[in-house]
Length: 270
Image 1 (tube, rainbow, N blue to C red):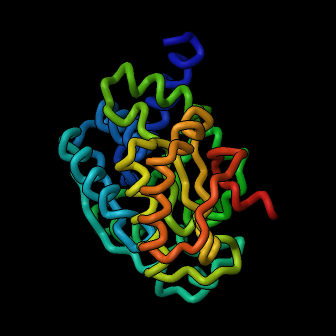
Image 2 (cartoon, one colour):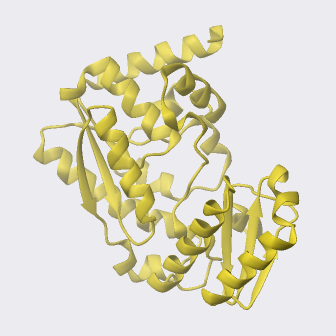
């Protein structure tokens, strides 16, 4: 561990110690798993509660993996169902979409925290997240949700590095975001569209592709892959399999984005 990372992790532990007891919005991703492990190590498992939110905007396999990770860490956890899809403001998919989703989630978490005598609620936002357009941060600030990793200045690369040292299986897990982030702003978010995206991305993962996105443009699917995977998808066997499966899912056209995978590509129009 570098001197800088050692300093940042010490700062993180200090932040967590001062929280005394904390509820963590837990997704099973790289950041929230690292935060959960550090919170348990610092405060003890009895002072930490992980809450996993299930909804149509997250795939089933992510929920199951999050539960499995909590059990592997011997963490106390709750599984709840959020209902952002029932909020017309969220479904209409404005650029503030994430605000309505996070407002729904954090409001639920505050109630759970109160019921369990917990004053502090934390999410896994990291220092890199400050560089992107994230309307959900407004809901976080309004409701007093903390981001200890961000407060400690920890970047994604540093979190992955320390996660590997800690033996966390998520250290090299691909970054993830809710399925609604695959739908262009202004296009209504429908449960059937979210399921189609989930199935399309799941099929690509079965073929061995890791970090990816399938952006849904109606009858057109735009696939984003890491540069090293772009050449691999172009062989005839993969292309035939993908075309057939995506057509079954309702896509007339299947395209490959030559810019490759990048977070928040649909924000480029803002």
